[in-house]
Image (tube, rainbow, N blue to C red; front, side, top):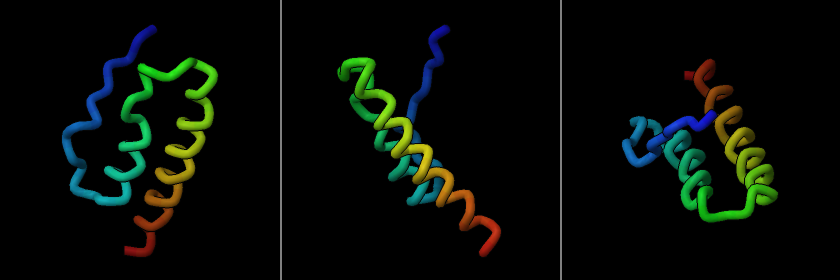
Length: 55
């Protein structure tokens, strides 16, 4: 199953936009390199979501 994702449209949140930028160029990498990228993005998104409660 392929999911089309376009991270070029800003989300209005700099931390989330920066995290999603970690997915740029993913299609050009070997599949084995995807895990590290996904982990990095997941950590950044988790941190951004954790900050929502502190608004």
